[in-house]
Length: 75
Image (tube, rainbow, N blue to C red; front, side, top):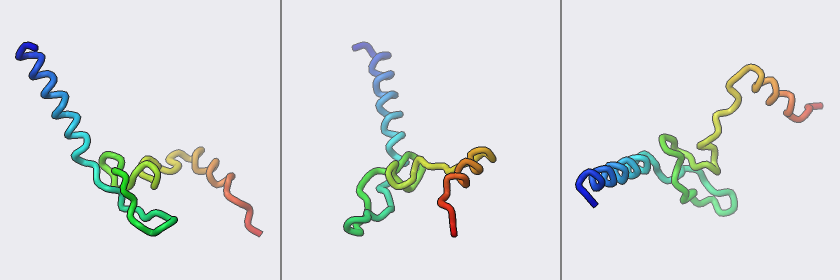
């Protein structure tokens, strides 16, 4: 491996480590035992993908109307 290939490999490794630097342990609680979730959060968030880290909710008017239409009917 020549020097430029080593530098490229080291840079890629450093960038990969940086992606994981902004991940923390999820701060949600598990339902079945009340213990904290042990999964890593979505990068830049505080919750894992199972506890809402990826969810953004409806953003557009059409999305909000579709969400409201799927709510259960109250009597």
